[in-house]
Length: 531
Image 1 (cartoon, rainbow, N blue to C red):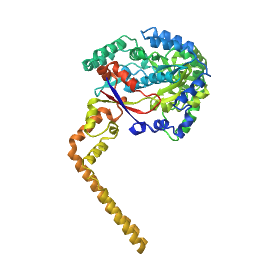
Image 2: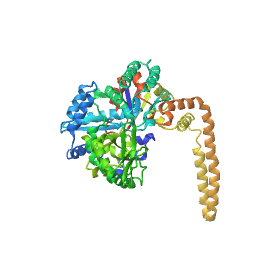
Image 3: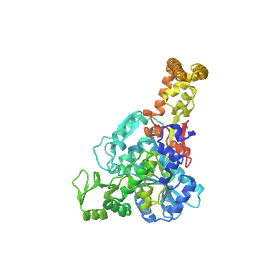
Image 4: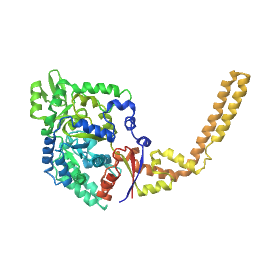
């Protein structure tokens, strides 16, 4: 399998938010909201600062040893777990919820970006060790987002009535989706291998968290990726002081609101804090905690706490307290010897809200790296694009722009009335000069005549273009077909499609291809041509 790539600036794609592109361009307006630039120098500064803060290496290593005892993994993973105990080892981290069958393609991309950056830093800074980490957001309860995938244009939805944290849900009902996947993809060269992998991971696991852990271990253990399951009582105990402060003093909301007040003057705010930024997590319940008078209640339930019983609950069962987006990063950065976080545009946006909060709690703030984005173009689509006379990057334009470019090119410019418009403009320029010498009050009348003259010519040009476009129905159909294939539902491919069809076709060579094509700190969009 051969992979060729073309790179272009994110801003040139038209698919990324202003805050994301401004961050990539290091806009001065965003500089107060992050600590380090996403450069090698920024990485070195983050390492220096991280070494000055408390670490939990023994706790982390012991927890991972216990977690990985349940699966067969690689020497690369075992080595990285051991390396985490060394003072010169740091992590590069990405995070995501346990979407079934990995959800969207960007799930895979962000992991491979994390692995690639860790490998590059080991070469550039050989005095240190770097371990790639995936932090699983298994406490998320958004089943509508996590419980479906798209396959061949169809949305396959997990039929389950379970509630609470998705990671804790059992896998019953997913066999129906696996059966559909098998029927569609088993005929591909690696289809049977893929289906068996899904059956092994989801059919032999008690919950989604475990199934996702097994799947990621199978796909990425050869690269040494460490998967962390933070829904863990022993690990959460390190967060007791922060959780208690949030429950009783609501400190976080006040700090983040001030940051949002400044950031929101120019950008859309990604995440808003609540007075209390914790959920209560027990059984099939994951609901917000609110303070009402002198009591704390779990929304939608009969569970209530006094100050005394709440402190006791936190002390005895820290695993029952689940941080929302405002506090999750603090948990991650407290536990890990982390120096960089790789996330999408939305994640980068909400991390920009957290610098002051992390400084308050004396927690390290990582280098923020926007995750890699890819457009996968199979050879058949590339051939069709070139036959139409376009380059791959051209197809980030909309259908009408593409058709206009094609028609204009084929008509050799005969549809453009630029010369006629220029001649008319020159005529009225001369009239203004003559009239100006006679009576300046005539100038408004001449300007009005010019507008009346130019507008019909401009409208005629548009009509000529529309009439010519009708002659290109076949080309228009081809453009629409290509756009629908590469930009499903009018958006980026990586936000709709799943990795399954590509793996069924190429096997692990697909993962290797994306890895080899992944950038590290270059921060550009990549068009990946598969041959």
